[in-house]
Image (tube, rainbow, N blue to C red; front, side):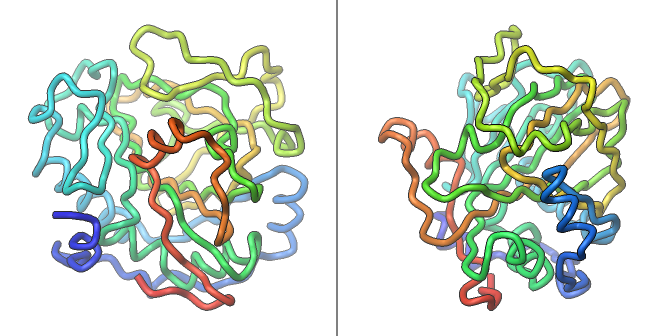
Length: 294
């Protein structure tokens, strides 16, 4: 099954997700001020617990249908030629089910419930208020921080996105509780006003593929972002953020969406773009302020 077939069969699964339940609301004055001052804001209860559970269940089903055990020895693999699965570099101590061995699934915006969310009028209105009337989603990550999994060090997402148009907008949708114990995000308010910082490779033995780290940060101003299922963090791609290790007995799951302006040009070299092609897929979300159907 290729990407075109995936798009045509997005409702193959039993789909209990209801994108129409999302409230369409423009950015408030307080949210705009927080965006400009802090580089992020949170919409509590943006989606329902039922909806985000449907997202999670669907993606877990995909992993179970094509598990990491069928691709042993590989740093990652494709499901149906479209979704890139990145297994945990360091196997969590209590891993049993196929999803317990997975760190991230990229390009989930190509299928089913997670695609419906990206193309919903509520998301288009929200992100369009920041980036304008012509908008694409270009990368998504279904993140499974299983018990024992390590966090991701301090970084800025724009370090990975060498584009001619900046910034991008990230949406971090909590699919489960995100707590201090299970590895919630931490952000440094106002750090989006800084230029891109120098990123060094994450040298921890067993660090996940692609992890980089900003060294020497003053963390005194960092703020933990605890969330409930359905809460949405909206953040600037220059915002410095990290996650911590999961020391809880339960998983912390999230869907992360990255949006950019239409007709954005990738300035990275050909070798980097070749690697990025595995984990990105540009899809129109808004044109002239109108939602583009999934």
